Image (cartoon, rainbow, N blue to C red):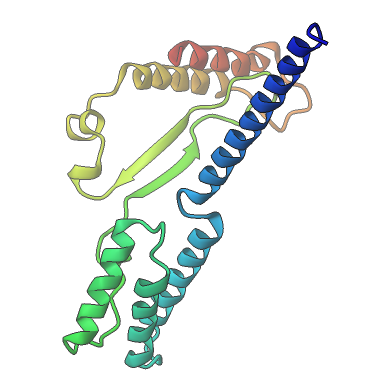
Length: 205
């Protein structure tokens, strides 16, 4: 009997450690789910904010209904919401309280001229899937503040542009005597395309 007592104590100690570990794990799991806003509450707050924002932009919606929507959002849906949304809702409620029932104006940049850009290929499209992609040229329009500094203001070309311009001239001189409608193309004309591609690759390495 005395020899069995240490084994019994050992089993009791193991059971105690096991249940303490289970209890600690349970407490940590509950604390992890209890801390912080849930996904559902954040989703409901986002949806309700967008709903009030949409109502605020509708001219036919009564101002009292729009005000009530923002007040309800501030009272029930601010849990886990960013501070800028809460401040916006408070500003809207203060505006209604002061008698300003006009719909907010959206700044969609109608008066600001958008940057005009046009992309187009400056070389023929590649005929092989292993060829490098062709360079893309950009045409800038507008004031000098949106234009590239060196190429537009000074008239000087970048080194790669000077190289590509030389490739263009070489290709034009090579392909000028060639007749694309002819049944057979001479060997010099066949070499114009590969030479031009090799030249452009050297420019943009």
